[in-house]
Amino acid sequence: MFDIRSHLLWLVTPLVLVVGVFAGVTSATTEEVAHVSTPPPRPTGEATAPRPYTVAGRVVFVDVQARTVIVQARNGKFVDVFFAANTTIRENKKNIRPRDIGVGDRVVVVGKPHTRYGIDAAVMTVMPKSDSANSPPK
Amino acid sequence: MSSDIRDELDRLYEKIEWENPRANFTGRVVARVRWAKRAQRVSTTVTLIALALLGVFGFALGRGLTFSGALDYFTLVVNNVDLISSAADDFIAALGDVMPWTEILAVTLSIALIWTASALLPRWLVRYRSRHNEYSANNYSQ
Image (cartoon, rainbow over all chains, first blue to last red; front, side, top):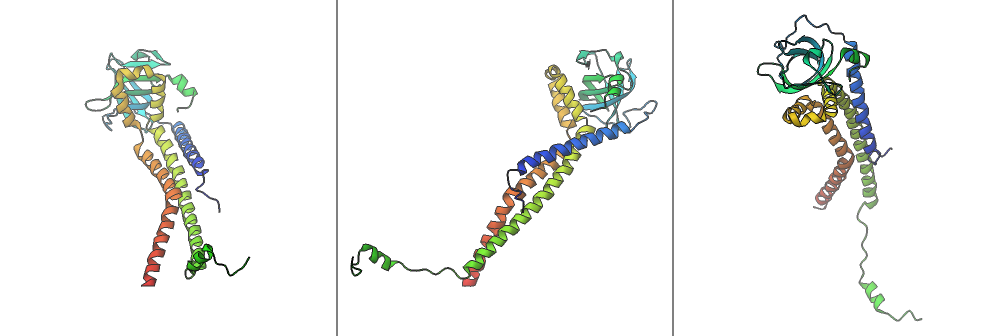
């Protein structure tokens, strides 16, 4: 019988883990690409009211005057993102202005939970719609 | 050389007492070998189950990392290292927020189960067998 206690086991274990994680990431990415969601005309984060420290997803609504964007996270929830004058917004490692953010852009936001719902952004990175459309989301 | 001359070595040999092997010695050895093989089989089975669980939980971890946005968060951190110092507390809180802790716990437990099944379980089973044998032998002698 194969001696599973041998040192080979400690090579197989990380291999199984890496293959499993990679398969999970691939599965989730494929599922997300295949799933075409139709955002509501004016989605609001108040319904689900998540107050996270970070969110990643696609922009479904932009209101530059109100300094708000609404992001549909990968799990399907809508999160309101509020940005201030001191929020760093970057695209390809270069600072950009809030008005450069468009619907369909893929963003990653880090910040503090807003007082009621959503997130006060400290840092936001933007991958424009054209770029994110060409490459599948990671 | 005369065989009548007795030296110190002969006198020492006279004091040696011959001890017979314990009763059913061969049977005990065979039983121990069988038990060791059985313990090995149990250990292998549990290890394979734990490996399968690790694969399943690894898959769940991959999905969790994607859906929670952890991979995007790591990409953001790697590409914007200079911003971490300006909002370090936000980045740390976001890390705690974004990690799929349940899946990480499941993967950790699976790895612990693999180690237990492959390294500790055979020893425990052999030790249990030894204690059980001693107990049986003591009961038998009483």
